[in-house]
Length: 177
Image (cartoon, rainbow, N blue to C red; front, side, top):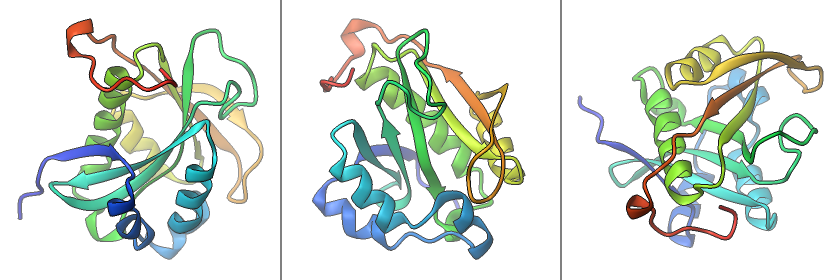
């Protein structure tokens, strides 16, 4: 079965209910938490954007963009950056390569809508090897920096430089960009 094209979109009221129904395998919940909680948290934070991953018109994933100056590492970064939190693909859609496609779509969307942001950062638990591999396929690199916290143990800090987008290609810029 072919998977429709993967794209990302800000969570709207029309998409919110579908995001709340997303689930990961029980062993993955420790890494990403509860989608409904993460959605509510992102929608209440003025420095965040709640984002849906779609295959065609079906919501298959979620993530949160964190525009706070010290996102992910707790330190300011030398270049404008955005943190990625709670990235997940519903368990029914895993194992098909859509995670890497979604991460690439996320970075393309960031470059287009937030052209001033130069870097995407995320933390991934060391035991979550499939997520590390997925992010690498999407162009993220391990910085060698570790974060000690987290309920599942230490986390790798990974980053991806965001490609500049020609001014004529920029659509729907937001105040965060």
